[in-house]
Length: 349
Ligand code: CO
Ligand code: CO
Image (cartoon, rainbow, N blue to C red):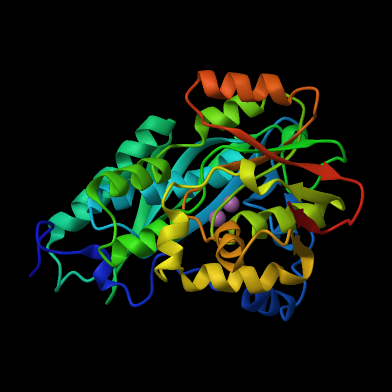
């Protein structure tokens, strides 16, 4: 039996680096082949809009926000893996403008192969993040499995009229991103032993930073749309926003915060499969400036775990929003703008 000192958790995964989501093209096909769900007037946000979480109205003042995320280990430290999984799962509630309140753990673990102490550490990491977010753990479910997998179902509350979705971005808005990208390329490099300890710490600290402060600040300003950047990458999530809002988006590539060694690591071939399928999936909707080479384009589509919020905010409010976020330790940047032309499309300069 392997204990947490010996085992490299990321080496136990058959795939990895990106959280192993089913690719967007396949997922869309599967969902479209199902009969439409029974409609309910209280369902404010459902399956059909590619949003971060479902929202269901309980009363005129309260709606619940529900989301679920789980994946295979993307770092070797079990405590960090638990923290990342919790931060990532809670993020979808923050992205909808909600307040997370309860969570359930979802565990798959090879109990005959790995020491129980590894699972203890995963759950301790998640528990500490839940505490930081003010979320109460109410239960969970575990199964014996070949590969460890962990995640959470999270429930939050939101005022039914204050739900933030992908839709609602307005021409003239500025687009803000609150964490750097390149996380998928970094975690794939980690799996191949190509990161220094400092780099592992850096990318881990990005993935374990709650979007709580970013979400609280965002709620004070005129924000028209929001999502979090995760498995479908910056351009994947931006495309979903452009389509749902019926607007165009211009991204200024030099302003996008990117982890420092991302391009070098991409050049060495550490590009997750999910990143390449994201790139292919958004190809029809995205035009790139000629100066951007193939690696630059992949990086903008890089499959992220526990990424930042992508916020469409009124141009009048953006400077104050950035200022307040920066003062509170959120490294937010303006990365582009919303346009009235080329609805549903992205142009990257
Ligand atoms: Co999300
Ligand atoms: Co999600």
